[in-house]
Length: 248
Image (cartoon, rainbow, N blue to C red):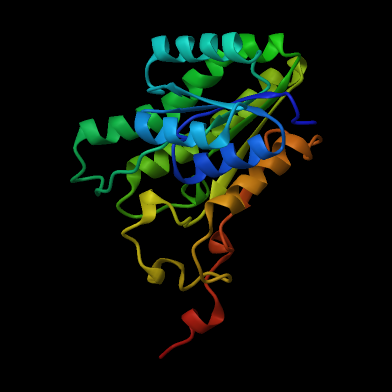
């Protein structure tokens, strides 16, 4: 896909991975709609990126706000060619201790919000003649993590939803893929230290632009891929390096 002149919606794009994706795709000539609940950060980023970017407030769990965002996108730019479901939250807690409200909130944002985005944006994607949807999952969509039951459930669910969407939307010329980042240096991981990545083959945090480049590859170049999983994790899901496994 030639991104010049294509219209892209990115959720959770005011900072972190979403902001990096927005910055890269604008540089490639796309029109980018930055959406988030962080209005000040989102407006600031849109102003920095210039005329090819705009900010729209969006709580991804609200159908009415999704409908408004799609309408604003078509009014300002054109029908949607690319949707990046990036918005996400994390809340810690064991299965026994995590409050039900906390568990449900994570699923509402991370999983229901992505489903609602695809559900609402599909007529626009069809008007655009097809396109691509990228769902930002996690290594937590490929393996389990203790004390992250809600987050892990939501990311596994998003991985499965991606495959169903890929099957259903192929007749419309719409590809759907998932991205699975490992530890990435963002505000969400600001309180984590380097021990998190010590056992990885690449023992460091990833950077948001490394995820952004993968998203651009999926959208622009991976034209024979749909329902596929793309991992950006420093090798975290591959296993623990021998130095860490070795007995002391």
